[in-house]
Image 1: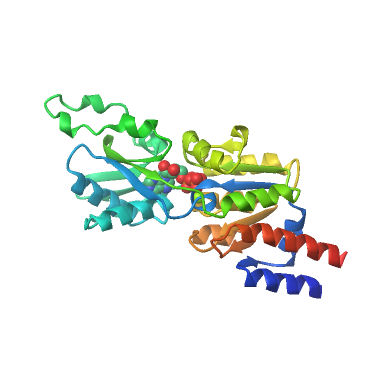
Image 2: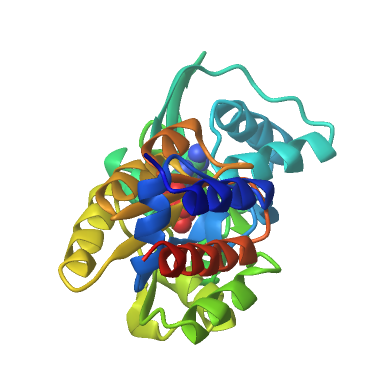
Length: 303
Ligand code: ADP
Ligand code: MG
């Protein structure tokens, strides 16, 4: 039977927007000394913004196609792209047979064949060469999107391609949640010894966001595939009790691998929620630190 103190702690946590799937998860959270955080949609808001479009002319058709693909994705960058197109009155193009490739992007088929959007790894998968834009005929200089400028920025870059040709790219900026810094500071102050970032995004982006949140560069792990997150969580688990906090489809396996998986519930994916032991329904990351305090108090009462 579950001690009354645990039941009332679970109820109190739930009122604060932290849903534990059982008393065991509450006990585990009290013992966690290591936190691994996903970046996009977890440490950062789920509301990213498109900041630049390099389409080499024909921006409307470009954005229509990109939004048509991203209409099928629940990733925060997809949401940013859809809103960007919508704000310009651009209707998404029809793309069918769309499937997501976690931590890379998305692909589908339109009237002209295979179309895709995603990061450098996605481009490599499609055998597209990002730096091959010089292949554009010199007679059409305006049709050459300036990808180099985007690739140099510390922002997420999403390439749009047709077959092995890159049509252009957009950069998407996300920023830390207003409550992330305070939540991390509270966890550090309350005895959490190790806090790392694990992201599928590029390292310059991880470093930029991490610097705002007090991460040392060696605690920022970037360019990760879902299985890389699982492996890193496993390595940390050899040294302590590990919580993984994430929002995406790409986080599901790491959430399951951790001693305790905590999913962002408000905008997070279904798959992440199912794999997790705890759902954080509030947008306020400080509720997580509060839940750990509550878990520790409860443990001290029932001992
Ligand atoms: P994180 O681990 O920080 O949450 P993800 O692993 O979900 O990031 O994504 C890693 C990268 O894969 C993104 O930064 C983006 O470049 C690319 N990506 C993922 N999903 C999509 C999508 N639907 N459209 C375009 N790019 C995507
Ligand atoms: Mg994420």
